[in-house]
Image (tube, rainbow over all chains, first blue to last red; front, side):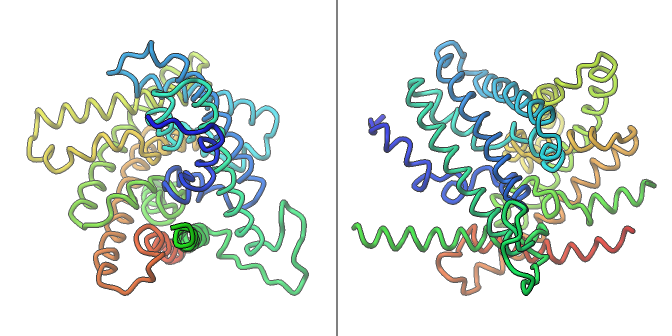
Length: 204
Length: 191
């Protein structure tokens, strides 16, 4: 395992290995809850909470887990934290919990979280896993924020519920429909690749 | 809601992929060839139907009577994981040709959010047993429909002149967007 500096370990989640734009993981919540910025942020925070604490637990007990049942163990750990996040949101933020519906419990099958346990936390120290989880979470929140800002702005003319665009603006209904999610993300992926090629061309 | 309407809603109107965004990973990953898309769709339909039955029984016979519904997430995911494993072993013994066709797709289904989504949504909507079964079959067929259509389009896309940055996942998502738009037309079917 090549030893990276801790800052590089954190920063890779933001762009080089951004879970959404580069690894195409955890797409279901990304598409489903980004019709409003507030939902995107709530989903990002909930998933980050689960990812960070699951990584902490898995990396600290990795020596105790028998290899054959590791996936099942990860799933139980993840499901525990998902249940906590779900109950917490239902108790303290009922409207958001209602808006996110089944997508909070569905964090349990989010491939980002299971993927990081299998690919990173099970092989690295607690500290490094924490940094990695923080980086991936930031990258995930960033992606949700970009997508939901575009969709809310064009679909409703608002940002976080505040009217941003004037009365001349006619909302593009398609952006808050499921179709808008697919189209926006598809175009964003293309843009991300163009940026990647441009920056690669300059540094090489 | 009568059962036919429920079935049509599950297949067309509230399609799992294009309306709920569930099962996007296999939808993008296994939709390059029509044959494998059909196999994946059938495997998902099969597991979804069984999951619908088992999760209903667990929910209504164990979790609700003993007020354990806060354990829903943990219970469902463990049941699904072991169920997929069981189905895999069962098919391998009973029907080797079917195993040949579905084999490699079955393990992938464990982490398919469509299955977990089905268990959670059916519990959320308070369906009766019959409704849950119809809903499971319908949702599975809806997934099959979406992934097979997608595979058909993507086979044609190979020959098309797609802008380079959009090749692969980018254009697949845009195509899915247009499909979702077409599917919103079905929402007029239920009032």
